[in-house]
Image (tube, rainbow, N blue to C red):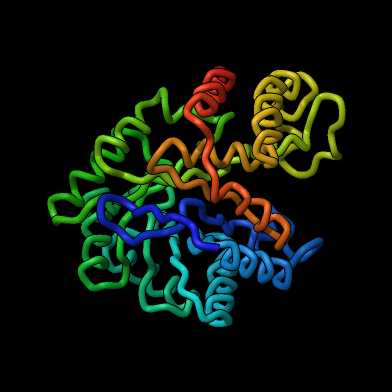
Length: 317
């Protein structure tokens, strides 16, 4: 399947308009990797994603920890098609020099078995002793060395994003990406100025948790709720009252989905793509989940449908 592409930042590498987040690949603590799914299943998820035209995978050194990168490295060696990888640097407090950034990148590249990555992101807006300017300069150095194509940040506020952009611009390098939580049920980036700042600066947004932990799949309703696992047990959004509150959004997704023969999740992902310069990165632990994600590609909501979903989800701004 051939899909359109979107650039990471103003002139970064072109990637599919939907990527795959790989936090669950190798993570035992949050995702129980190794119990009901393992390497065989996520390998199939990887291949099904690539077969469906998705060529962009987001990982991080702390996913697994390191196992997500190792698995991706193995899977890439097994196919003959190019994929684009984004990974992340975690700003531990003991990393207080540019050399620490370089060493962390070297370790990630070794696990991924590649010489460079399309995108290297700072996982959280923490800089401790290193300071943000030193951190951004260290990332700029790696762009100049050719080990990363573009620089990104994650979970940065509008002000923090502007500061990072300024430090990189002094080196002639754009800030390409800010990875943020964004979905129809988590729209705070719109009211906190992050979306506007990203558009102004030419920054692409990677939307993590784009299905709001599964709430936007339509699987969870006030009438029939599957047994809740992990963090969902204490998340008030999964209570009967919380599910009643989101019912108008789910109903709108179902109605639009019926028109296109798509699932509520596929409509929700398509709504994010329709925002422009936003790449949703849902997870996929199995080939079936990967194929479901890919169903968000190859078609477009009308402007009226985009606006209708915007209206019914305004309570989550």
